[in-house]
Length: 478
Image 1 (cartoon, rainbow, N blue to C red):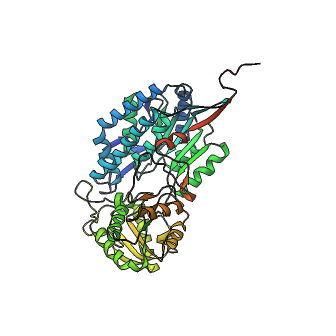
Image 2 (cartoon, one colour):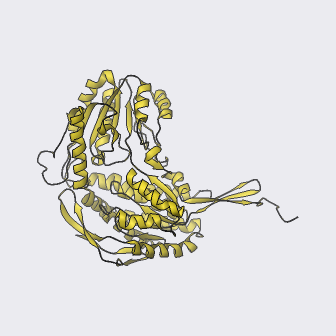
Image 3 (tube, rainbow, N blue to C red):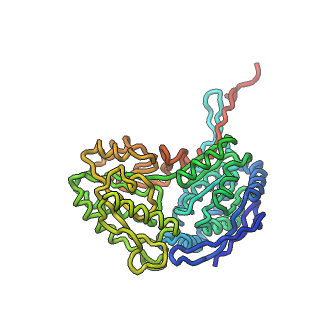
């Protein structure tokens, strides 16, 4: 049983100002696996005061001091990889192979990327008589989600730490245990008092207090578009920077070529990973209308090869994270059927033999049109929609016909065609044939948010630019 009812503030574990203990559920068993406390505005005040004090010194720390700290954190992560993976599996229902692989791997990978960037990051640049310097923005409030919890913590904490900021992290109350272990790693690594703080809580209790706090200089949030809008509105009176990584409904354009069946199968399997609970998931697949039947066959075979089941066994995917999420997905599956889409695989209800746990059948709809709810709403489950296109101009037009613009994909043999299409897609990321890069900018267009994370772009997110004029060589009073 995980018992984490304290918060990490000013370098120590402290009780909440007002006790408010809630259970944490394992979505595979529907059993309570631990407890956390939900914080309040009073807890946020304590953490912000600690972070503000710490920032006065940490902002002037040297590159070497920051590198030493990041390397100590890296050693701590390696020491506790198994603990982190087990926590992610228990609270999210992720198969252990996924939890110990991509989930923990992304945490460690972003840290190594941050170390590499910090070693040579240019914090100053002389432009004629003006010295431009990049300085830490200050105290950062961080609000992270449950679906890739360690990844999103890494995307915010490591670049903010490397650039001299102090911070308050609010992880998701649905999957909070991994973050508590992360805080233990930070403490053991010797993070200076107040530089890193953690408060558990929900959006109304802690998220609102963070986004509206006058002594927080920036809020970085990953979550739904609805949540992002609320946070930005609440932050507006204090004129703080708000970086948002929000929802997505990502297109995957499959080219008409000899790799077609393989591309469809690959896209289907990719959609199902992490039980479809990925903001960049390629949930809208575009195929040549003349090859729709071929696409149905390839997608059906690929979906039926995805095995939901016990995360501690050999399952491909586990459950979705909660009953509320399961209910939402089921309602949208029923809507897709009612709208007239062709159900190719899966469908409503739980997979056979999995009555306990929030399991969803890997589901594929074909003959979908872009006006259907299943093509427009972010389902956030293992549900793929296949749409037909007449030519590539039409494919691009339909792909861009969405309020989202977080990510996209193009799969096929003609790289030059893929690169030309990539320039026309209105999204922050385009993955050609599964391309992946830890240094690539990550962030969205339109209602998928603003700002960029990952790599060097993530460093700039937490920096202010100062221009010191008259700072050229030999500039002295006349």
